[in-house]
Amino acid sequence: MKVLISLLMLLPALGAGLQIGNDLASNPVEGSIRLTCNDRNQHEIRYVNCSANYLSPSEFSRFVLEEGEKVDADEVTLYYKDHKGRKKSKSSSFDAQKGESSKKFNLWIYTLLQRPLLNYYGENEIEYKLEKNGREVTTGKFIVNVEKQDTRYCQSASYWSSNMDDCRFPQNFCARYFRDYNYCQ
Image (cartoon, rainbow, N blue to C red):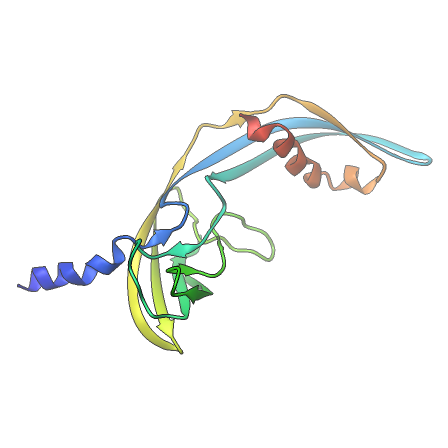
């Protein structure tokens, strides 16, 4: 009887997860560019090796409940472990009519100001808590699987800029390069 009750308690959480799905792919890409910068009296050429790691189908997603499941909540909080093993959280308002978070969560992008929800290849366990007016309504867990794909290589490319700072800080051109070459596909 206890086993049946435990299983029934898990049922509401079975369909919860990411709007884009819980099986994602990590796509490392590499390539090189030649960047020529000209500004009046200055001229510089930089050769830059670019690399990135994109998540598909997307690096952002909303949290969603199982289709047809209704929970009267106004906020969702997702809990995850960061790369150092510390528990962190991200919150969003929750649209109870649609059964999804109002905002998309950052899944993969790590910058000075952003921290991703997912940190690992393989299984990432995410816990969630839904609240209404600050009171807990329901909790659950879901697993997001990230499968690492083989590294793809783009053909070399050349870019020109009239701003000398582009040669000093060429990372913006790396992002453009990967977009221009459809992420080496």
